[in-house]
Image (cartoon, rainbow, N blue to C red):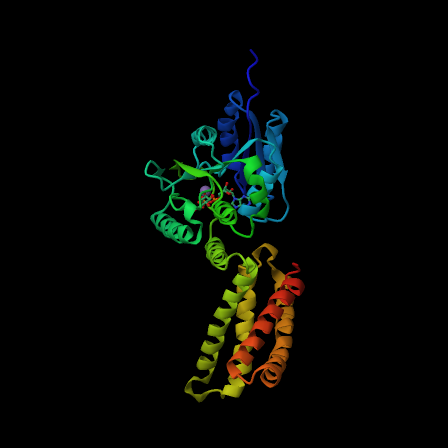
Length: 369
Ligand code: GDD
Ligand code: MN
């Protein structure tokens, strides 16, 4: 009797400066060839430490290893999406390549996926059977809190899950691929986005994970990642209608309002400057602060540096100064022709200014569509 052909499995390993970690991980994963028709895709974002060169070398003796190398760091979620879209397996597993996820969990996840007629199996750090050795107290509290917010913003069907931000999950590619195509990759948390676009349709379960300390190097999770998470939540709560980047741009705009109010108050303190003298300074300060924060968060994958940063600032101020006139014109037009209500007139002006600033600075300052 012929044995059935082994199931084809693709393991996606995103890497950013993981030269010290990737070789031992690959060595631990390759024995899975005994059970599966295995493919390992390393998606590297042009690491400066030679990760890609090392993987290239390792791939020479090992046809199961494939390297996808991208120039210009586009982020973790985008690396995962690219790896999954290129995967040729029936089943796929995504995991961190820094040694924090135990290679032993891969087999368990695949078995669970196959046994249970499931689409998705998540390796959870917060499952009762899980063990966390590699998270600081602060990160653990942060994740617990983030998970509650995430649960609230996702479909009811996912309520029983416990880790919506995990970097470890296995899925059935044919079923999940259409959703993967739709995942917005401006965030860090691919899994959360996948659950969000699926609207409760995935048959999902969890296995407990043992989360280890990192072997080498340091975490890439920073303030920007937290920001992305906040944006993801607001995006879900807006029924995914508002573009993520526009939400980010809007939040930064609100911070600019605070900067402007604070600046005028400071400049006018002790009768140093009159309101009319203080206002232009405060407006420019607020616009500059908006620009710098947007550059660091909203457009960080197109981030401007050095001389480009200064040139960008001038362009941003130019872009932002046009609608000031339009705002006055529009609010007056609205007031005269649509409704003589000052609140709605001003709101109409503000909305137009926001849309203009967002669209024009995306295009002309950060060169994105
Ligand atoms: N290609 C690519 N591009 N890979 C990246 C990038 C990137 O921009 N940023 C990070 N990675 C890779 C790292 O090399 C590592 O293999 C994996 O993604 C996880 O990155 P870490 O920087 O180690 O994340 P962490 O350990 O702080 O965060 C963990 O917890 C998060 C939830 O709190 C990970 O498990 C995350 O996946 C998880 O979302
Ligand atoms: Mn890590």
